[in-house]
Length: 111
Length: 114
Image (cartoon, rainbow over all chains, first blue to last red):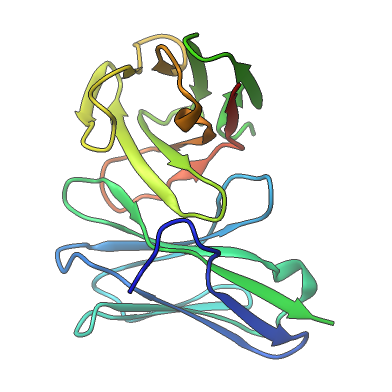
């Protein structure tokens, strides 16, 4: 089960390896998805977005994959660097335009 | 090229006082969202405003909390008679449009109620 207030799940990767961060979204009517990165003491920072009519989008070192069948979103980071260490959130936006966030995942990069 | 500006960055209030949190969106953005974040948790939606209108306030407590986004000036999140449980980081985001547009966040206001 889930508990509110416990530490966020953590993904630990070796520097230079690829990271895959997964997210399950809840609203099948959502048509726009965003990945955010949040460093300690800062606001969420936009990484990459994808619309529901796409299943893949690539940015610089990042790729977002969308599987609408199982309502799953993933963020792939190539050649993970220490500066990638942060909490990552997926967010979905539906017709009502409300941006809803999933539970975050802490990415820890080992040197 | 100013992003979303929030002030103050840190705010300390005694129980029973009022807290006013300000958010100036990116220039040209008319949509503002407010979120609350507790330590080690995700961002919880509070309210969505478009210039002078509240579009969705389903995440905002009915008592003591209010938000506005006037025609001129920043968006304001107001918390009356603060209690210790209001202590959190409050983030504002803005976007240019309603659908399928990026939302950019400010650095947040960290409210501490003593």
